[in-house]
Length: 336
Ligand code: AHM
Ligand code: MG
Image (cartoon, rainbow, N blue to C red; front, top):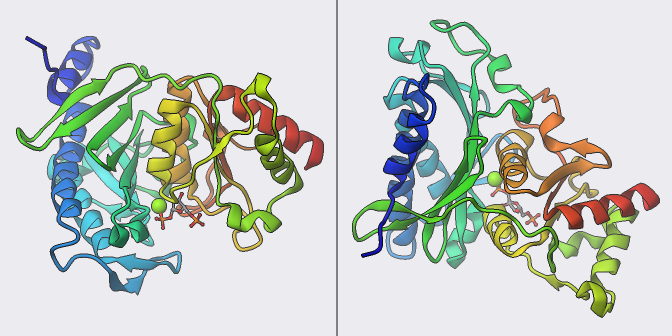
């Protein structure tokens, strides 16, 4: 009989490898797992219940909040506050970081940065969406209130990162800096099961993902790279396929598995790119590096080495198979 390993069992096995582990990270993952299950339930009935559409307010970035954005934010926030291992969170849906004030939370070692429902404008049309998260050890003393500095740490200090994709199936993909593992949710038994152990991205790929509608606003190096992707050359399997869902988690997940590159460069509308460093770029950069890939914001600019200055700061993102990211970097170096 096939042996199934659940997410819970996997986490405990990993913890046993570190005799000093206190189980706090395990507890943090239990919170994420629980909120992900609840989101799975809601997303899957999105067409039936009155939960799609705009919530009527804009978030801090002036983007319209969807009802499910608000719902997802509350769910993850509550789940993370419950167990006393997290002292605060920063969320795409909250202007300021959120302090967890209970005594047990003041002793929490970790902060979580989260995009509770990325790509949520896709929900109304039944396209996959996701949750992206990033975990840091706090730098402020245990027992005190969480501070802005706890959140403004470079991505290379992430303790863990991951995403949940609510797609044709729901999956949780995460890393604690020791490889990347993917778990598929079986709703009939309510359990995430290890389905993608030790995920590695192919060194090269044949997929490029970018919103080409913004083409005229791209930097020259990116324009030239796109033309390169489209050229005929059998020896390098070009032309490549263009695939863009407009839902970062889905585009990233596909490219991670199949090999590819995702690009969100600066454009005239978004001079620093559109994606947020702390809860979109950093976690994806952590995961792709753990899977053998690369993530840059520009020539020689590793995403994980950027020192953040603001909670909601944006940055360009070029992420994917290492050979493809290298090639793009050559083009940007040469053409700007
Ligand atoms: P969101 O966090 O408001 O959902 O926006 C992020 C999304 C990403 O999922 C996606 O890759 C990108 O925005 C798409 O942007 P665009 O529509 O400009 O191509
Ligand atoms: Mg987002």
